[in-house]
Image (cartoon, rainbow, N blue to C red):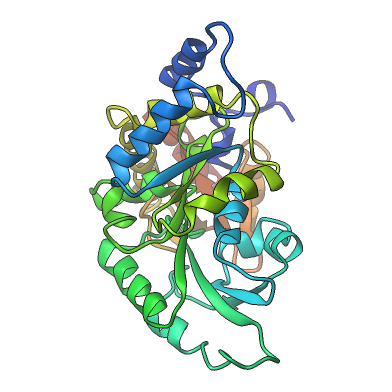
Length: 348
């Protein structure tokens, strides 16, 4: 299906958005003659130095190709073959990566029901009874999504509490940061506050959902783990030969807070959309709107009418819940036109 010929602005995913002009400019700037492959280039060196400036001197950044790959590399650093990952039952690694953790890492996912997609410290401690039992997978890593798959955000204090609960029990804390920028923009803090300062061990930094072409990173904050990344990245098919084009994108996002500009705008458009539902009969919010995701419940007939014109994903068809995503290039006009059509659909 071709969005430009059959549909107006997509609300299905921030992956549907194009590339930010500054990112395209950075790619073009890297397209300057020859450069060593596999990250031995000046653009990658600059990105790695920027990671230290943003996240602290102990942080090590490694550019990769996609978000699922970033999760696999980051998690593999902390897991053995009989280990387990504690995560929310809505976590991306549990619901949208086709069992990659189990298949590629050979570990068990211990999924936990949550309210609005967020783990609590008690969720961790309540599932540690099997530690030392040779008949049970061994919980070794706690993985959270920031923002969550339901669009909610962990505060710095909430992440710190999870880190303390994990570390006290000998576990490490991983963050799937595909939308880390959106979370930081909502929380009005810098990226370091919800990673390094909160006690995170390893996290992914997402660029593709925030205006990049194809650029993600694994950031390691525990110095004891960094040495293994080059090998795991290669083994996981995440080492790009022309790494300079990925690194240039990540540097552009981290320079002059472009990440914040893009994410804050996407968040604002989601808030505009959510606020516009207030006077639509039969419409309600299923989860708090804290990033660039709106989970709305609508009458089934209205959903079908809207899906004939717009791209978006049903989330819980039984409950009539759908997911609408906004992006850095979503405009107020896009949102208002969509709201106008939601009004019409709900009135039928």
